[in-house]
Image (tube, rainbow, N blue to C red; front, side, top):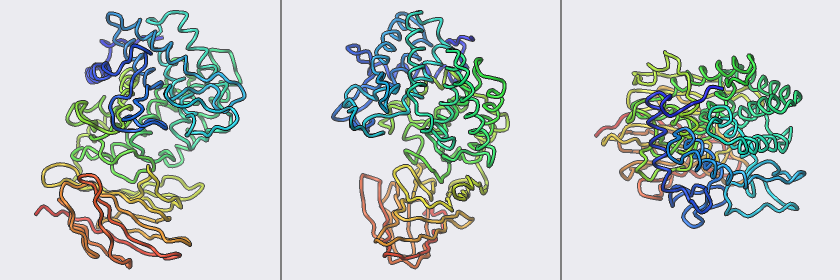
Length: 498
């Protein structure tokens, strides 16, 4: 085992870890040794932060990891209490679907053995998130943990493996799959369960082979879950890993960084869409997993992460900065240059997958704008799916953005001019809704959208859209579609700095 200390970290990682520990400190509730949700706005599982003020089980494990990393004063003793508190919230109910997972928050209702619903009543992925956190502690920080607690952490990992149904996680469920493969190999090695290790290696090979088909993950271009992928791939390269697992992990890690270098715009400090899974559209205003990893490479002011003294979105995810700092990453030399290089003009096409359907992403980037689209999917937009997006600089230097919410399947493509899409409606009336974030009220007509910093010229066979205002700076442009209607929509994106 190669132990990690705060002093042993590279400078940017050390700074991020210190800042995160200091930021989380006021949210530690000593009465139960868990973190409170770090703010009053947002949701966590089934709970609203403003009313329930939930305590966070997973993030508390990350917080304890950071305390063990710093290891000053009573840090190790506090971490021991926190980890024992986390362990109290693991389900140990063999035969139940949530066996081996953990409560997200103590404030959530206990699942009913007779009737419980995945995601609503429990999160099965806490087995992987918290189980692998215990692996990191045992592999990198165990010299600061008592033998009794080490034994409890190992027992919890074993419960997490035993409780996971063998067929729940598919290889294309990328972010959970990479963690599950690592956990199976670790548990199989340490508990002398060769069947677990064999299953983990087979599963890892399936994830790896699927990635190699198009050098991308089926959970495509996710600012949050690409961060989890990097976390899992670093676990693949632990000392306990096999030579194959280490090789596959290193190959995928480097390829993922090269993907990010293509999609990242350093002037806009954002990854270009389309996004299969994104919790936000402007990375400096919400916490994304990949933003934290980029913080290891990019200096403050360049990295796409929010300032800790602002009211940013997905605040609880910032606790992941602690395992990110501990694990580190290997950024290829060519990627280091690319992450700082403002594109003159860049466009490319990426096959995402060909099974179960052929999905293709297209992207165009200029020095002050970028837009992307996804074609071939039969999915309808939901809270995390954005199949057509654009980002641009507004006159005041801030970033404006737009994204599509499609209530029917669309086929979209990005080219030099902008975004072109075809929408095919089903038997009921549905809508195409464009969400805008701009710092001035837009001027919208049937042929033109005048946005601060960008002019969008519209060609469509749909009636003129309706403009509505939501929260300050947020607007929607909505097109109505009749039953069984097929329609085209072209958005020509050009600079408008008047």
